[in-house]
Image 1 (cartoon, protein in one colour):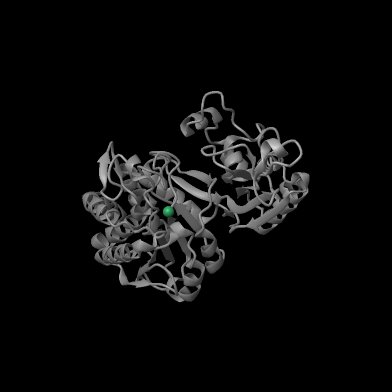
Image 2: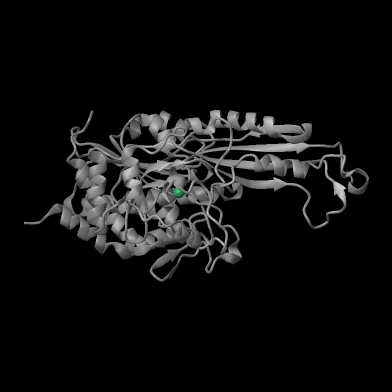
Length: 468
Ligand SMILES: [Zn+2]
């Protein structure tokens, strides 16, 4: 007797070469959503993605959008019956700019395989996600003529610019997208061979701070010692933002940072925790120490505690500098927020801190930039159990429940639009994928395991009675 699940997994395995050819075709389209000159390519990428979904048996496939958006691609297969749950499969077809093209070992938009990895912009982030969804669907349809559950697919075209219209799009297309479970294939694996399920993302807040001392630059010999230097003032102000070990020292900020729950702590304590190895992997120079509370584990510091980075400074460049006190200096501050912290409140705490600590009465200008709250989901319940079983079956390894220190703007709008439905955040990247960097790559073996996992996942989720 044939086993439908085994047949579908065999079908996804048999289609590996086809999947790779389809992915390569998509990677050749430079669908850079941040570049206005590439609008045509984002459109071409949406059309190629739509053709892919249609070829894999999805129905009602079309490009969609709202005022000013890049094209979304949607499709569905809704014949599993009204009692079967509906799963929404998400990925995005736009990509980051290539960065410095000379730093790539091969053309960013001409896919190339080296050492079992496929190099190219968008290979891992996130064109592989969309192709994986298509193959999970067709593996069932070609072997069994039906899917174990209803499926909707949404492939976004502007994730890399912060999903500016996603909230509006979801609200205006809610009837076509209504689902019981979200499967978001834009995250990644714990490491090669070990799948990940992401349940926690830090938030983001940012601001520009400028200190002005003078109408214009003055001679440092004539004025130094009496006239304040705004660059030194800025350095003192920035230094006041952290304590000696590099933890944030902004008044009131820690009151909103909640410590990890017992369950989170158990999950974190189960992970390899080697700050030195992490430092080496990140290229930390010999002798440079790690920062943050040494009483907190590495992953607690990266996922559950706030941090601040000075991502830009304006002063006079060394080249062309002369003996002057310049008029003003500025810094752009980027904060990663822990679960529990609200971006607006953090910005007000930061504003109060810099107003209090700006030295010597220098003129202060403070400008808040866009922020996003942290996101977390409780990684328990039937959908998470299903995902863990599916990933275990696909990879032959136990999945790791992961936090991510970064922020993914699209998860907030999903949480808002669909209320409390489970969000399973997985994906094709791994720590070597260098997403957003030069030489982005996809591990082909793990990508195939992800597809097999998705085949299992559709079956696993069908066992769950629909909550509607
Ligand atoms: Zn992505």
